Length: 448
Image (cartoon, rainbow, N blue to C red):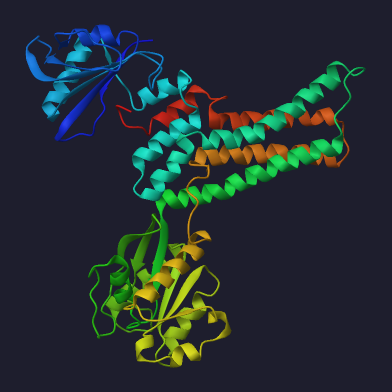
């Protein structure tokens, strides 16, 4: 295998830039561009000169050598830590390439780590998720898979299926010595595996929520306090607040966090009957935002009896996930007291009061992901590829159970169990084609 090199730090100026070299000739290649008084030692930072392609001193910095196999790639690695000028980092890389290294492709360091058995494929994908994480929750969830959580969950399903296949093979090859497994017992073990995969599918939605965030649309009639609520949740004056109805004409999108989970919040125009052409455009955009959002945050004025516009918004959102707030409790409660049965669990308060905001955050969490706090330590499916593999495994197990139910020969379930194991193997990398690997590592940055 050849030796690769790449800049491992983000583009732009910084205090330090790292240029990484990995492969069997890493030390030999680095020796051509790094000069020091003492030889490189394993896991010891050595100070010296970095030479450019012409042999002139380009910079002074550190070389950190790490010998195989105790490295992230399983190969010899040498990192050059130089001053964080883009020019210095680029010229250092150019010198390494001239000295015999090849420019690394996207994710090639992590790909080598997988190929050398340093991490399974699900953990390799989690590396990219850690890098891409935009929230504390996203980073913690990715760490759960990076440390082998998903691999362990898949092994919990794969091991019993492999045991059933071994028992079937023994009964077929040695019918006089090895008894056939009990049909009911086999069915029970397959059912248990199906249930475990179903739980992973549910966690796929949780993982996607943590990474991408919950979309939340604030809707309601004009002057209900929607923009005031947006400002309160964000902790800043983002939307214009005025006594004049119809101040908000367009959709305003911002983001805040609930227990580390990102919430993409959309403040929309007041929904009411209007002859104003511009306001009608805003109302139509509000309706589209409501359709696209995962959860509706419905705000109405609870200090007075509801008018036609408020009643219409409440009725239109009753069939979807929502949180209802009867606002302006400081001014009265006539509307809240007269609420209908579908709004029995609605909140009553003021967007200007901290307790109301706390209650809203809890209600949004329950509507969005079913609990106040997301368990970020559980393994989860982190990509559509993984979710598809689990879906195919479940389908195969479903066909195996159908075979058992109709009373066909027990050994006829073997092909379905093999298909399920192959699908699950695509997640961990036990079964992975070059096309699968190319697709996974293409989303990585160069240098990782």
